[in-house]
Image 1 (cartoon, rainbow, N blue to C red):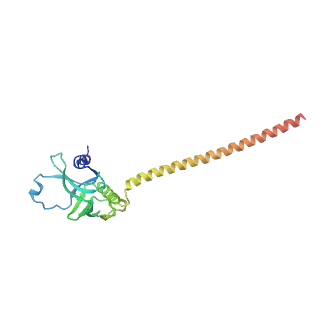
Image 2: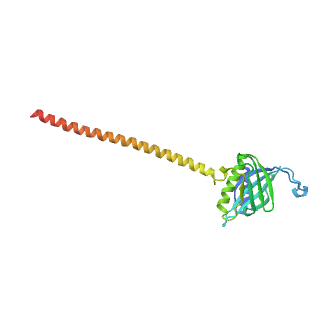
Image 3: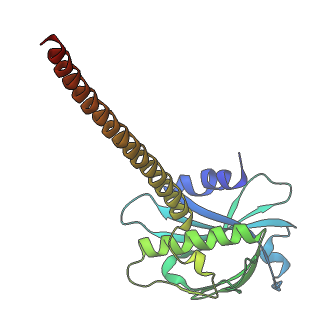
Length: 210
């Protein structure tokens, strides 16, 4: 089972939530945190997770989850509602990059994802989810690539592929229909010619009998 599947199972499912997206991150700038605040547990992996409640009305949350080295457990460290999220900064609107910033009412974090692709997927899903679940106050997306802001472009790409396939199939059927139509016309012409030939032959035969 992947880390993200395990996080969903251990952290969100017990709270009647569903994880929609997660991205593994590291801080671009280190925070000065007292030893006692970390519990002295050493190195860890950090995931930023987007989740939604199963109960209605749906509530979106962004949660910071950590897994300390030597432990198989995932621990929820911080959580914000989507209303507390003010801004998502994609850093560079012209190219794929792993860096992004999250600004909340009471926090500001500068992150670098494990890959540019993972960051782009997370931002894309976050934007699409905000459009769906937050009709009033929406967070601001700045310096994000246009391809990430057009809704769920992954689904759009799949839909475009299906549409293209349908169009090609339709075109092929139309062309086949046209060929069949031409063949039917030729067949009809041949039948008419055959009938005319038969009539002419019959007249000639009757003439010779006379």
